[in-house]
Each structure stands twice: as structure tokens, then as C-alpha cells.
Image 1 (cartoon, one colour):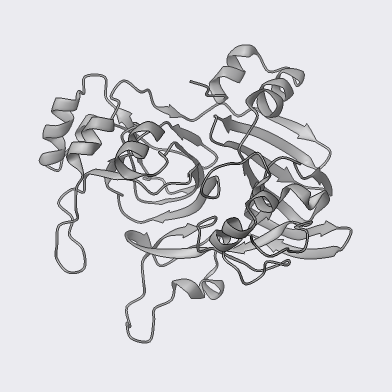
Image 2: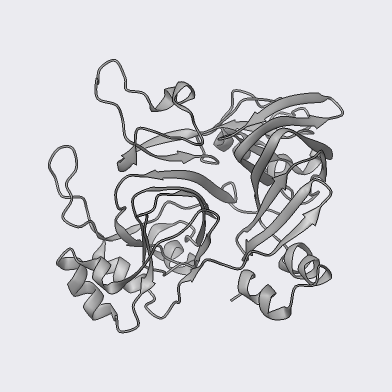
Length: 363
């Protein structure tokens, strides 16, 4: 039996885990200004700055910085007190959502993720449906989402073996504020010049189809997973990108219902005035701060928030407030009830059934 613990009755701040990637960058602005990016700095044994591609916000090794669980990792807290952290209804073996910030100066590999059934059978893992929110995009930034109409598994395989997978893929130039939904089986790649927020099922199963002949620091070609990747790829899937911006006024500013599926929901909170919020009794929610600064307040006191931070709101957190000192943009993410959290609120706000269908994905 895990030891008893104090009630998790306030939002909790998490420290991100930074990961080096060959396609990453040294500059992590606008989320982590240079003086605050110490985790991305080089070690004493390595004079070359590291290329940071990902900041895992809700990874198992992300560490709590506040509350009675301060100093423990998310994985440790979930293992000991899953119901207190996530709510009694969550029965999964891991924290339900993996959220990240990504920073790119080069193309990621062309890749695909399996669905739950395939991943359970072959990887003993969950599958990976994911979504992106584009935070910053340089003029020549690009993404690959899905395959061109004429592409098949056969010609995708040929293109990948020749390092030419982008010829078979749909290439788009995203803009800041765009939302992209990628069901499992979507062939995709993130290009250079982007800062984005990603949320997915908790899974790191990725089948690399093509790495364009790129080599790692040791000069070795990076491993491909063409057989399983082609098995799981779904060429028929459309590119769910640049989703409609269903945004509505709120007392604190505005709320955008970005997208929802059975695995996660994403809202964007434009906080310009004090906002009053309630923890959801049956689930945990995440708040990733994209920009701005202010305070997270509850009856016990307050803590400052700022860009790059991620807060978890456990079910027992009760009432809390966001008090902006600067206009703030936050991503709210959670495992939804599609009707109660999206369809019904959108219908009450006058969204048409067609508009609702374009942001609610329920296969």
C-alpha cells in the first residue's frame, strides 16, 4: 500500500525535461529565454552547445516543483497515488497524456505512429494519436501531413527507400495559431522553423519511415522501421490541419475550443482579466503557459506563472484563479467527455453542427 499523503488541493507546477535532438536548436525562445534555458546548456565535458528539440512537459521524469509532492517525478507520484493525481476513473498504467514543446531547425524524420491495438500487440504500449498547436512559424516553416492523393503504400515504400518521402507527402506552410490533428496511422513530419505544443496519448512508439540519409554524431545512419511503419500507415487519412477557430468571449478574455477526440482535448485560454476556474472532480487537467505572466491563486495563497511553465490541476484542487499581470495565452489539455466538454458548450454558443464536427473527432 502506498503511504498516505496530503491532499493534492492546488495546481502543481512541473519542471520540463529537455531532450537533445539532431533537428533541435540552441535558442528555445519564446518559451525559454536564454538565461532560463540552463537545462539546455552544454556540460563541462562537452564544450559544444546541445541541440534541444523537445521539452517533455508531462513525461514520467518531469519533476514537481510545488505542493506536497515537490521533488518527486510525475512517474513516481502516479505510481503511488494515481487516483489522487488523475481521478478514480482513470485506469491506465501511466499518466494519461504526454505533452511537449518542440523546437526545430531541420526536418524531423518522416514517421507514423500505430493505433492502440497494433501498439498493444507489437510494443506492449498505447498507440499514439496526437495534435499540434503552432506557437511560432518562420516564413519558410513547413510540415508534412498525410499522403498525396495518388500515393500508395507501395510508392511510399519506394520513396522512403530512396530518401524521397516528402515527394509522396502533403507539404504545408503553417502559421502561428494553427491546430493540426494527427490520428494514429497519419504519415507526417515536422519541418524546420517551428515552435509548437504537442499533446498525445502517453506513448513514444514512433516508426521512422525515412530520415533522408541523415547520420548521427557517430556517423551512423539512423534506424528505420519501414516494415512496421508501412503496416500501420493509412494513406487514405486526410490532412486535418488549420482547424476552424471556434473562439468565444469569457469573463477572463476568450476561450477557443481547438479540438477534442477520445484521447485528449485542447482549449486555448486568452487570459486578459482575473479568471475563476474549477478543477474537474473526475480528472486531471494540464495548463501549458505559451505567453504572458501572472499568478495562480487559491485560498491557500498564490504562485507566479510564466511562459514555458506547465501546471497540473488534480481533481481535488477545487477553485483557483488565474490573475494575469500580462495578457496570457495558456493551453488547457485533458481527457474529455466529448459531449459535456465540447459538443454541448459549442452548441450553446451557437456553433453549427458542421462546425462542431470539424473540431470533434469521434471515430
